[in-house]
Image (cartoon, rainbow, N blue to C red):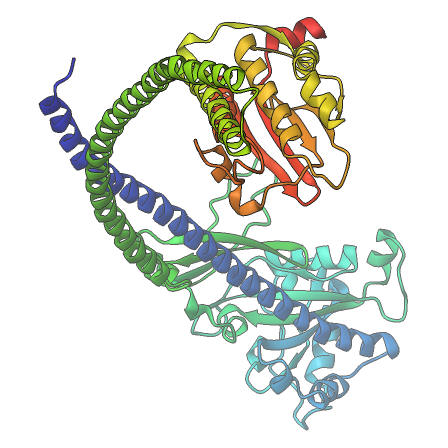
Length: 599
């Protein structure tokens, strides 16, 4: 067995370990919550980063689409007229104020289709064109002057002043430009060139050509018709830094744009380098990729954010607040647990002391109860002899004085006999009280129907004298001490008869019902009743509510009933009482074995 010292030592260690365990659990939980919140913040940052990246790619795509509207407007000019001169071309673009309305475009040009056999006549006609100035264009020539079967010569250009050096540029002489032109011609749609180095005029800059074919007033329906009726190409010239200048690219650490149109072609492994870049990709930067479709080509945007810029997308102040609050709660919990453990230890010690006191009090109470029962038993036996002697003496005196008994003597003898009767009843009740003991119970199956019938037979003289009606319903079988239960029923029924009302005929109704494993047996009468303030008092020994002259009794009957019921692990109570009578309810345990047999 463990001694008190060992228990105290273990309690002390537990008292120290519990706050440490709470502190550790709190820190683990705090770490888990912080990790969850951190991941949520990171997810929100990435969502915001993705939203801004989508917005940037959408704005660039929209800007390129806007430039297409300009070329479509110029093509409508060519489709509405059989011939558009240089002055008409320039006049239309000036009328829409192209330089201010479309600042992203570097220049717009008209590139007619020129077969080689008329190229010299074509050059002379351009040189002699005085629609814009009196001198014409005496220096106009093809650049480069190579032989090709069909030339595509940049003939009209706006704005002309700053770009006149580009007049005569032959797109057919360069494969990339010619391929873009043929794609536009054959599809009838917009086509853009791959990234090109604009090297004809320093400084060199990266840009691209946006082309839209013109077929005059004809609307071709197939490839053959598109090649047959093709008249020339409207071309927009763009430089990337000018096109991308309006966008707030500085909110990102770095932005790179690649042309990836040819990467997905079979058997091609191209090393794609960015044709436009701003900023520098720092260590630990996060990068998102967005693809946009530009006419017949596809661009990829690589958008990067460094660690600092990424952290600024969403504040981490919430993490610090949670960490501080969680740490404070954890420390408070550990401190409170320590105090609680100490209080629990004190409570356990006090509980143990109270338990010992309760055991001692129980033992003292049992000794006192045993002494009381012993006293009641001895007293009842010792009183029987003198009481019997008194009865005998009264009888002898009555016989001796029969012929000369005066009224005062008769009255005294009657009072003496009445006192003897009460003493005799008291000794019987004391004897019954002393015999009620849980340890001496003889348990058996008792049929309450038969028991009530037997008791009614024994009380028949009393019941008949009162002209009482006893009505019993269907009563169960229970497990108990037959003799003690007989005493219980006898006391309850005799009480009902004794305390009947003179104003009405006595009726007693006995019923039983099963509630939560207990048989509740109710004995209801229509007697004089018991005031509610006396409900507890009537179960105390020697407590009477009426004088002996009114109703004979010792004040032990209901106390004996309570002792019997409690010995059977049940309860007795007054369920209702008033001027209309009293209802006693006796709850006795139902036996599972008996119920199964009955079923």
